[in-house]
Amino acid sequence: MDKLITLENVTKTYGVKTVIDSVSQAFMLGESVAFAGHNGCGKSTMLKILSGLIRIDRGQVLYHKKVRFSYVPEKFPASELTMQNYLQYVAGMEGVPFENVNSLIQDFFLDDMRHTKMRNMSKGSLQKVGVIQALMAPHDILLLDEPLSGQDMDSQEVFIDKVNQLKGKGVTVFMSCHEKKLMDRISDRVFIIHDGKLEKYEDTKNGSGLKIHFKIYVRRNDKLTARADMITQNNKLVITVEEKDLQKTITEIFNEGWELAGVEEYM
Image (tube, rainbow, N blue to C red; front, side, top):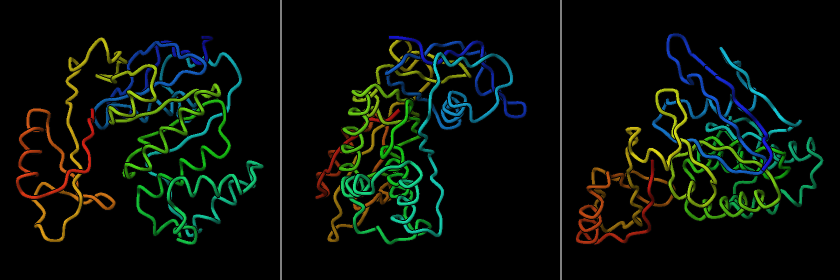
């Protein structure tokens, strides 16, 4: 594969904190790269460095060809516009027929929210709008900041399928994420950001201090009292546990009468 972007001794600081520290790394045309690590480690900063959205303090970012970016931030801005009006506006700017956007709205199960103001939409639904905006007219590079945050499992499957289709067309993908499923099914390479450095995941595993944990999804049951460790996510209840507690917690859930809806590994 040809080189697309090269970082040469790139450093980025915020105040006295060095988030990215003298990083040198080449990224290839058409590959999919995931950045993982604990919250605040620099995943979002890395995406912004690659896209030129922020200035670096030292080093160089070299682009080996002229590129255009599609960017989906973690926190998609709300507005007074309805979802449909907003996407119609973006489609007009991109020169995309709105029937293409209609298909994406249906694919991501947002049909009944067409006329909802975006300020009244949940974080997960807003994230879907951001993904639709990026997918309607994909550019050379797709930047995804926590793209599955707050999304239901059916929408996650749609998202994975759509992104893999874009990869097949030569679109380069950079994303920050915690979901191991997303890394396994989309990413060609995974880097852990640890102490400002990029470490290949297969070389470090848990050596970076990154904890593996699991989310256990449970179907709602009005006849049962929710456990203290359950939180609501979309139409399901979720329990987050460390790997050592996974089997014990699943057994407890079954014994209490809950129906298991799925388990996902996170980093």
